[in-house]
Image (cartoon, rainbow, N blue to C red; front, side, top):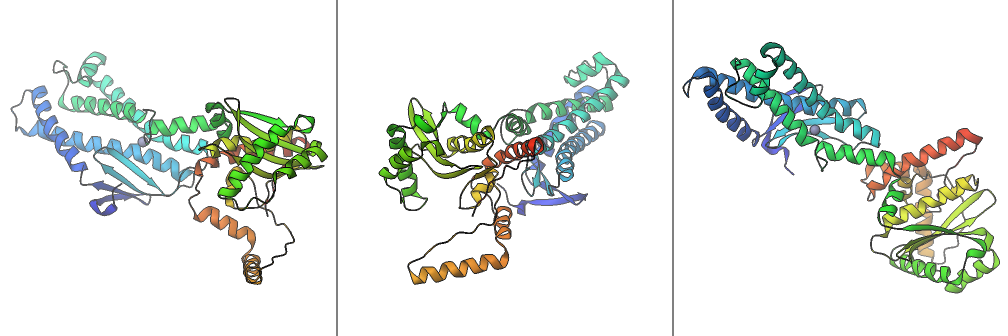
Length: 407
Ligand SMILES: [Zn+2]
């Protein structure tokens, strides 16, 4: 976008800098130029007369004020939710409130996005009420439609123009497209009602199956092994289990296994292997073979929590790894584990890192990473409130705790 270099500050309000971009002056110039002519016609004054020109300047200032109020609507609502606003910038296409972070919940995003249009609607209503009160319905309506036949004073004609322009600003901003307010409102509404992963899976025509016990077949293991090799080989470290391992666990302990498999067009495309304990579900390996499987896999991943709730398992253990699990609603807890590292150099490096982590506190490290870094899968954050809600309802219902641990 633009750098701050081409803007200058007009004034500050509640710590928010109101700045104008040079391009805004094109708008001002056009508005004044065109409206002087228009008011001249309305008032039957020759071009260049003082009154039409002053009305045009006042209209331009009123338009400017309307846009600033619209943005302040967003800004004050954002501040109410703890989102910092540094600058409101006006440029050729309107205004923009620059926030220091995104909304952290669909509810907040909805309120912040809707506050601007609500302000614009309020301005339009007040202007129309004033105009109808002073000029009557039909004349004021004619004036709003910029008809020269409207029998209104110069001031009322200006009020009518401002009412019209605010209605146009309102309609434009409510178009359901990004980055307009309408697009943000739509996204917030969708995120309120749908589990992101499930919604995406549904939209992609993906079916989810829970396979356990005698339903497990070699065909399932063939499919899962392909996912495992693909994912393990690509980015999640070296695959260390062979194909026979999966047949063996399927044969020896089928009742302790939950395979969550995602299917599209009759073909398995992703799967997750979970082991069922007495009071917990251990999520272990997962994999997928399609190009954009991560999102679909989220639906799959969430299935572990659904399964645990349905089968009254208190805990879902998500296993080790990084902060991407926080975005899925999993909280880190301290864990112990034993390892023997053969290479002495690597052993020293790991021991060093472990000591550092102990010193700063593991939790602090993870939280710091979450706060200090734009998450690569930020869109998945929407899952967390949902998981939290389920956890809360489970807590209330039978005093159990659903949480997930991570090394
Ligand atoms: Zn807006």
